[in-house]
Image (cartoon, rainbow, N blue to C red):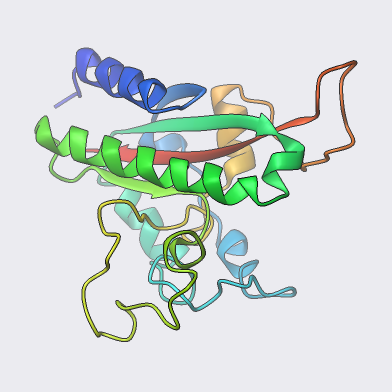
Amino acid sequence: MPIETTLTDDLSVLARTLGATATAIIPAEALEVADRFAALCAAPHRCPSYGLAPGCPPHAVSPAVFREQVRQYRHILVFKIDAPAADLMGEERLVIARAIHRIAATLERAARSRGLAQARGLAAGSCKELFCAEAAACAVLTRQRPCPHADLARPSISAVGVDFAALAHTVGWEFGRIDPNKATGTEPAMGLMAGLVLLA
């Protein structure tokens, strides 16, 4: 059964209210998932968050499994936050990434409250770095207790193999390598950070 346009419109408005610069709705089959993106988390230059969170490799769902899971969904709500490239390469990156996780988690809950029980949010960045940087180890991975930030933390879109460059092209967003020196006139160089919610 198709998802009501009013629901996707409401979720898009909510995303922008929460701070998203823009949103888009695409068919789930348009999402490209490739093994190489998850593999980049491990090699050749291992991500500092590799192995430290359930939403990051090697603990996250593999791209192969994620591709099969996506087949159960009809639509995807994609959202982004535009920001100066200098911010995305500095400490402000963590603030923006936390906002992406918060938006994804809030949209997921909103969709579920409207009857989409399988709605699932994903976001940019590692939840360990963003929410538990001071903790010696992830509470979930060590099985000490439930996630203390389950209401905010969502799996990494890179970890499951989402080809974000292809996704950005699909929705018409300019996306490329972040370069803080690539300014246009008096405007600072810009980049973006994004998240998405799978909608059954």
